[in-house]
Amino acid sequence: MKTADLVFDRSYINGEWVKSGNATFEVINPASGKVVARVADGGSALTEIAIDAAENAFVHWRKTTAKHRSVILEKWNDLILENAAALAEIMTLECGKPLKESLGEVAYGASFIKWFAEEGKRVYGDVIPPHTEDRRLVVIKQPIGVVAAMTPWNFPLAMITRKVAPALAAGCSVIIRPTSESPLTALAIALLAEKAGFPSGVLNVVVGSDSSAMGKVFCESEVVKKISFTGSTRVGQILMEQSAKTLKKLSLELGGNAPFIVFEDADIDKAVEGAMVSKYRNAGQTCICVNRFLVHEKIYDLFTAKLAKAVEKLKVGNGMETGVNIGPLINKKAIETTKYFVADALEKGGELIFGGNAIGDCFFEPTIIGNATKDMKFSTEEIFGPIAPIYKFKTDEEAISMANDTLYGLASYFYSEGVSRCWKVAEALEYGMVGINEGMISTEAAPFGGVKFSGNGREGSKYGIADYLEIKYLCFGNII
Image (cartoon, one colour):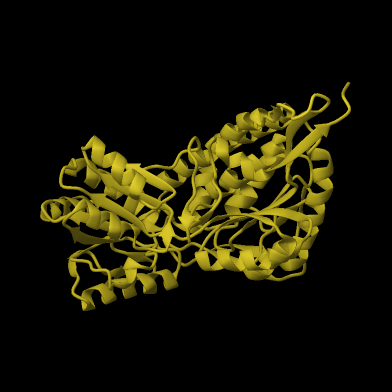
């Protein structure tokens, strides 16, 4: 399909493209500030309708076989890959990331559909040895029910498929609520889901500008049995509070403060290569981007110099242009926040090694700040921009203490050539994910998620389907 064939301006509910009233919101291209589309604002009213549609569809969808669901998921995967170029263009227009990264996200997002198309057929139960001769004890697993998936703007396709694919594979019906910054990708893949053969109401997309009100509807609904959310810790806490009365099951992938430790025995060239991938992808706007570089004092100067040399080669610009590595930040507020982090660090003694400036209203130079200290704001707050603060440490114990000195525990990274050190440090880091001599850790085959204030639950891997299932114990008695 052409890109225009996949652009829609309203919600997708029960197999139909619908809107409520005449209210609209604008989708802005962050690279140019121009309006990409005006989309009908669904709001709370359509959210309620979508819940009803998903509830009705669940009655029938849950009864289908895992194999039947797998066939439809496979078709959806194929259609997404066939339309990768158009989907990538939509993604870049609405969230700004370089087109090459968008194409990579299409493949990454589709991989979850492919994975769970197979994993759904492996939802096994158990037969438990009975405690008496006349009983038989069996455990089965059943779909939890209607699922609401609330997704962020920075990965507008992959964050949907990572949540929705296991839900659909398990036999749940779903409602997707993308952010108002990037609703177009969600609507595009909804059309492809329809073409793949999902029955009406099994997959719904509600778009709107008032995310708080729409989220509250999900939380307070007794029909919605499960919420999966990716976003800030503050919003995650609100969702948990609002869901308390309905005792809803929640998966929360929240904020991060990822450390990247470079020990004195590290392969520095490999460490720099990993640093570039894990820091500057999507202009630093990913939840597992490095927030703090902790570098041993013996190699601090060498690592910093090599990192600066690599950063100099990055090209900043519109993600649709060839050769661009760093696209725009999502909005002006993000630009101002990034400026603030830089100014705060320099005021407190940080050394500006590279960059440090905004480029117009939409872009920010890839930046390196040396001599970072724990009193600087980015030591405790998520940067979500292209700033690389570099701290010094002397001992392994100090590095581990610095890395763990945060409320968050999503992703972490370190480089060392010592096998013993690798095991000890990996076990000591208080994070849900650890990259060891590797800066790119995301894959559909591994569990993605964090600990502490970074949330709960896991996405991807064999563990990713568990949160969409209920365990039921069957006790057969009087068997003589």
